[in-house]
Image 1 (cartoon, one colour):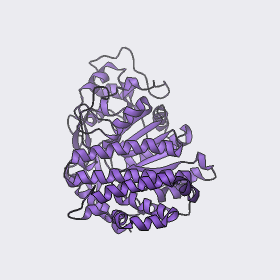
Image 2 (cartoon, one colour):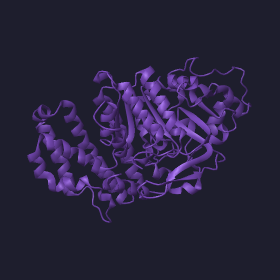
Image 3 (cartoon, helix red, strand yellow):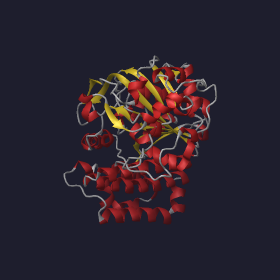
Length: 469
């Protein structure tokens, strides 16, 4: 069963906002001209084996559905899918792959990452799996997949976000444990959270570290640190970035800096660096919550997504894994369009890593999805999507004959009809848990700007939530 703190976090998520961008933890801000809309032509060229080529004679008047059918890579969601082999090969032309789901409640969007991560790990050398969740949230799951004495039920139930506790993602974690078995530590896959939303996760990790390396200092700061190990955002009048909290963060930074040698001797260099990062993330979480309490949602999301991207970059350096898969909601993993108010994590990663970041969206046409019915996210109902929404990318994709396929936008732009079509589409569709009865909801986001490619599933079914729900 979830702990009280976990239940409180889940209740908070249900109250955080009502719009598509708000519930995904994202809002939009105008980009600078230099950072805006990286085109797919900046990406490494696809090989003929990865995506089909387009006839030079393609006519600009060709129907988009016909052109999509010729350009798309059909996929079946199975372990031996040749189509998914081709998708993974295309994704692997980048060192950082963001895989974003446009609905948290779709079964296929748990299966696709499982099958793609397996290929990226086994065939392409990816060794870091970064998942949406506060830094520190996946500590128990990382212990499980790296052979620790932790059972998967306990590890799953510890995750703060309900949308990872599904049958498909569980199978991914089980496979990762098998893959890591008997491998040296420097060749094992690790899983870590990259978010900076919940201060209690960071504060608890800091407390645990200080209990080991400096219990006397922990006693000195306990009055200020201990309250932050609880979900204060459940209170009616929580205060954030107070003088006491700011002083605490600065004290923690200085204590870790001044006592580096002693702390490393009592733990390790890696653990000391992680503790410092927990302090950094604690600071960002307090800032994020401060803005949300003031109903400055755009500013809060700006802080959060920037911190997400910085944590992904830090995790690559800290873990020594150059190649990383980043899983989360598409409203984090995709880039930002020119009319946005707050840059998404995907835009920050693009700004830093350029063509080494690939933004993949998982899109649905119609069907059904699961959404929580209570604040604790422990009960679920099935809702109709009633898509695709007219005018969205998915409306055109649904007219193509494959029931599930991959479309790489760099390759698609080689076709004049698809190039013109992509330039004219300005919306994609999401499902929103707080507005589940509305089904598919359009979000203004030109797909050719925010994604490098998409996996589209025409008719989807609800995800099955498992342990911890």
